[in-house]
Image 1: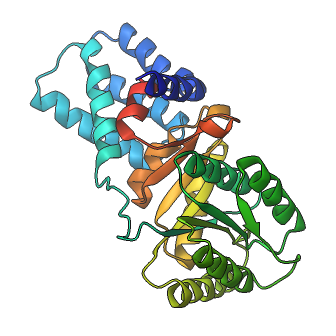
Image 2 (image 1 turned 180 degrees about the vertical axis):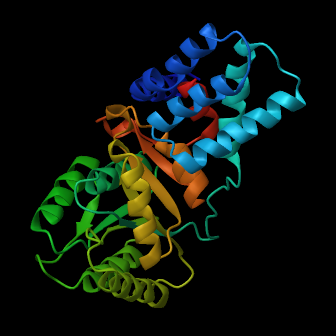
Length: 306
């Protein structure tokens, strides 16, 4: 329970800017409200949009809130707050699925995202987290078009105490993954994390690169669970949603890692991503420490936010 308490405190602390921008303003609005009317709904709508939940998702939240208020015959403005919390929690929980592990327990993660979103840092934290859970972890530096990416991942591999497979700058990313897959097999690795695709300007190149990597994993590491996680920067708000849509046009995305939630008042983008993209948010970053990359839990998120 003590560990859960610390994790929840980190989450609450990390979401404090979003809470100030969203829930505190909602509370202030509801305290001043005399009746539940269209003016109140419009004020709530404005607050939700300002926290970067996005217009389409905001309108859906308000529609669901109105339906709930009608159904439960709520007429006291102070009761709108818990009703809104339930609506948002339920939206985040919709379609939530446990990550399916393969029978042999082996997994390959392909981690993609443009430079600057915290991709390499997230990989380092994921490596440390899984190693602490007793898993054998290996990293592959397959974002070969930026020398700093390889160097940065090497620093994180040392910090996390896991091995790294790398080639020189400009190497074929698929060749790095090929070597990493064979190393993972020979070392009986539980989790291989591949840092790849740090650019988006040419979707065809991105698609070709990831397809080639996918074919190598399927051929060389038959039967292993394979997932592609996209790293997005929460501080960019709705631009993160646009970026996700662009990546989705190039390759299938299994989940989102949303970084820098502690540095923004735009944490509502979590709700927007879930609702408009229908991709699960798997991990959220709420601080600089290794332990501050947390598995996303809709219940805990809603609780911490409200």
